[in-house]
Structures are given as C-alpha cells and as structure tokens.
Length: 67
Image 1 (cartoon, rainbow, N blue to C red):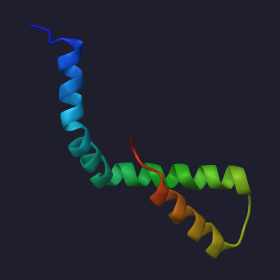
Image 2: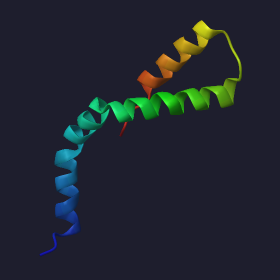
Image 3: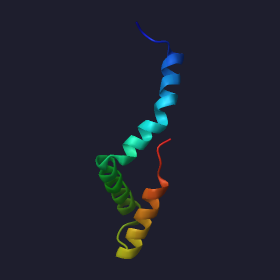
C-alpha cells in the first residue's frame, strides 16, 4: 500500500533533523566536504598563504550546512 505524497512529506519533515545529525556525524561526509571545500577554494582563489588557506577553509566548512 502506497502512502500519499502528503504523508511521505510529513514523515520526511519529522525525520529531517535526525537524518542531518546522522550525516554530519558520518566521517565520510566530513572527508567529502573538506575535499570539496579545498577544491572550490583552490579553484576560486588559487595559491595563497598556508595559514590563510587553512583559516578560510575552516570558516567556509563551518558555514556550509544542509537545509
């Protein structure tokens, strides 16, 4: 028996916060996000001071969130 789209949407809404917490806790997510931030920062800014690169990367990583 299939559930209605409204019911599925409500279940998704109820689960969303727990699922996001689970994703954030997953080491694979953290590795992928660090890598993606590094790639994007390299593409946008090019070579830069190592300390600045690290600080910007950490700041960006902390500001990116799942909706």
